[in-house]
Image (cartoon, rainbow, N blue to C red; front, side):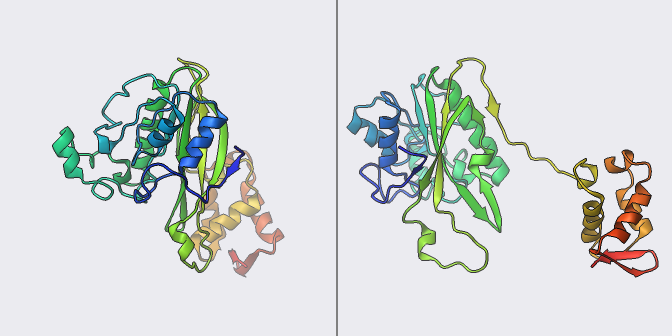
Amino acid sequence: MKSIVSYPDRGQGGRNSYRGNCSPRMIEDIIEQYQIHGLSDYMVGSGTTEDVCKKAGVAGTFLDLNRGFDMMTMDIPERPDNIFWHPPYDDIVVYSDEMYRAQDIINRYGFDPRVNDLSRCNGWEDFVKKMNYCCLKQFTAMEKGGRMFILMGDIKKKRKLYSMLLDIAKPGTVEQIIIKAQHNCVSDSRSYAGKFVPIVHEYLLVLRKDSPLIFNIQMTKNTKGDMRDFRCSTWRDIVAAVLEDAGKPMTLAEIYNKVDGHKRCATNPHWKDKIRQTLQRFDIFQNVSRGVYKIA
């Protein structure tokens, strides 16, 4: 197994008709590469991991919402050696009532799978919150020395990339990231205009549990940044950004007002002089009338 893998021939295991199914050959390679004797999958979908493990003589527990296991509300039934997890990619493929009938699960197990189906979340933030809950829940259940293999992808919506790899919680030791080429994608048969770049890869994140009780967790934090407060921002860039943000010519007083009170002013008592000097020094600024400037 290398850091980039490709499986044009999917291999045997699971059901081809179950959308989002991963290649059995990847699971075969994981078992061989890491010399695995126990591997569980609690979102097993159509049973790909189960089929591969049975063929390889690898023990494990294989559950799913479609088998009556709700990870959001139910306890993981054992302390697994290793875990393979292929969560939904937000709502790219909806599972309950699409891949299986929700009413069948209600009749058989007494709960509605649509309530905690990760493919039915209320937007990206809700999905990330539930994804990270499930990730940490599985990792904490795992035995010391175990590995968690998470297969995930990126999503493009309305010119914005939503990356599971960036936003997923990463407990323990990040041991490896493997790039997996995707085949037979919907995008393969489409032509795209403009700057759209089709996504034709996934990630396999390998997390190792070296400590049973206390371990490091890497988590993404999103925050707003105002360049008027950054020490690294130049006065040229600050003034240019103020004018770009306004979208029209501004008087010196208006520019001062937009910058006043921010940290870059606090570190320079002569900041008004600096703004005037900046406007006169760089040819990206145009003086349209007395004391009025715009981006050239």
